[in-house]
Image (cartoon, rainbow, N blue to C red; front, side, top):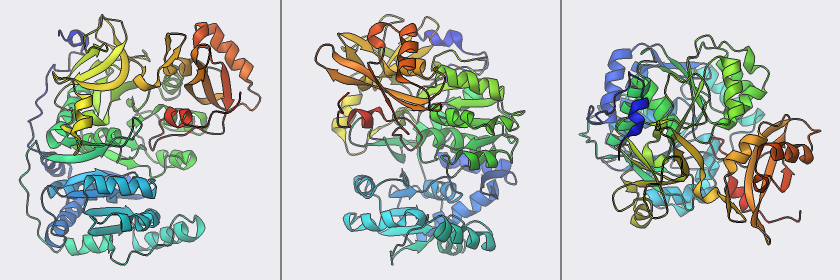
Length: 559
């Protein structure tokens, strides 16, 4: 297949990258540490660690893993931390020691945590004490866990600040539950003892598994995507090929609000900005928008990544527009479709175009990105990144004509090895000739730009006509007074399905009739919602992606 998108590449972007430029992710850490040793690497709640400190702490923890816990190359270490300074230390330590990282959402229920620990075969778990009760309740059902390491939010703060933080979280905010895990080790103790031990470097190859990165379970049972060091390195090199001419090495400051345990933030923020010597400003709780804005105000930040719901929430807060955007020159949206109204308002407020990208857990994650030369919203998810092929396939896995919708399929060095201990599910997502099937419906134009239509499983069939929720949601989002919305299909005896919209409103006087009237003016009749239901909020994933599946699975109420 001809790579027609290459003709649309900016002149600075190469068609191919070399995923074997580094042996492993550890080589990238070592290079950046040497180059930017005294520069700030991570900031959180008033405390900053330099590249040299991250290096020293991670080596200490890696030494503890080796000499005290006796962990061997390939053993799985589960990290159950939000965006705190302990996360990059634990992450880099595990990778240095040749271990496989299993990222875990700290907000998981006992059942979700139990499944992921058992499925991954993790022997070690690192968690924040805020979630220790969940860990405690899961442990009887997870016999494979040998080591529990718990950390306080303020473990890397000054002693006084750490004590005050714990006091506030425990007694004022009620965020630290009562728990009892007698065998638990302290992160601070591990750091102290590890600093007195020597670390022995581990030979790591590109084919070694760096992560078991579990999918969100939105398409069924959660599965662990096996991402190798080479997969992750490929995506880092692809990011560098795309953004290298835009970013100033050693000078960037990125706001990291999306959780680092999510693949988007893990690769784009943690790894890539570490590679270019940037400072990651870690936002521990992005749901607290006012507090997040107060943290952002402390920096002349240059870069920001997020999802549509986060951009929208920030724009709705009047204090956001008062921030200093004078140095912001990189805004990247992914994880879910960026809506036109949100992208245009973001650019109007910040002065920076919001570049939309697309990726999957299974692709480390990036597949397509809009060019850095883009001057405004174009409704596409961009062009395939260097060394990547995409195809739009029909149900028989044959390419469809340009402009026609089909399933988006991907090939490239960033594509996962497969699902952990799950050959059946692995076989389902790969074609016989090696294409990874994304489950997303997309189109491609004559310049190679890809436009996402919707998730294959979210498509609504009204009297034989395809309705894609993204399209309807994009129109509803333009109605004054709408904060956010989600669209699903409802069973209907006459047309098979009809469109139903769930709406969270800013304007308490907004009526369903107003929304329906607006959509009638902008959509074909069969796409117009038949039902509007107002909600106080919508179910979301850990990164703020709206879960249509949860809405579909609710009991059907009489309309």
